[in-house]
Length: 365
Image (cartoon, rainbow, N blue to C red):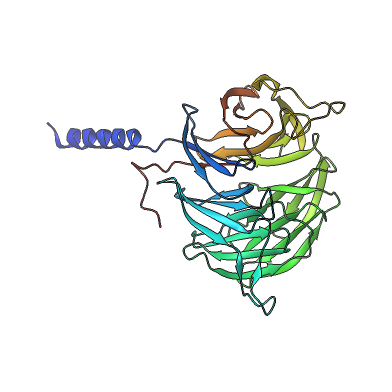
């Protein structure tokens, strides 16, 4: 056989092996009610693993290469003060991190209660957790679980955290004060609090180019737009009913925002900040919330988690969790509808994703 043909055949076989060995997509789902993290096969919808973490898990973050997940256990029966670090390869808790230590804020050892949001810093060596009760962003060594420092903030409550593209800053949203704290990572200090015109400040998302950050304001049904470089609000516009989660498509042309009360997802044109479509989740087998009805717990639809898997690639897919109906929906952005639903044994709270498996994952750090 000709040498060029042999090379072409080898490359074809190599690509075939690479595609065949691509790790399947796993959805990571926290359940605040049960204290569990579920690992769900995205294609079959089957629960591959059930991992017991801490009491009342809320925030969830996944490392850059998908080998680890960290869960903030804010507490359901009592105020929590732990993080659960999970190896997504072995699907086991590899460390329970107790948020307590002496970091110079007080002479004694301090416990940081009610961690509600968490994130990995670039490189995965450090974690940050927002302690709602203690009013601090806590820095934690990912390998040792040791508290490295804490940055007190003035904002009341802590809903979500997001790390700037360069890893220099961490933004913390405060639902009770309607503001965002800016924490300098190198100095481990809060350097600014961005006041917002609205209240109920919650989930945040960066545009793919990193220039803007959109923030939902649940109590005022609006979305604030932050200039990341200026660290200032530049615009506020009306949203759907009780916005909760927000995410951008990979091209940055559309933003999706869940409407917790009306049981739908608004799709916005990022060029003019106008709603271009609304995806009803009623076809997912749930009934939208009625203001005249009284519910025990969340309303029947209650979209509570929204994410894109494989963001920025051709494999990008959108998923949303429905807390009230114990389901996850995959969205079809071409038809602006629900593509399919996955039934869960528990109520979902937050979503994450990973392509790490026992067979194909790199060795965990």
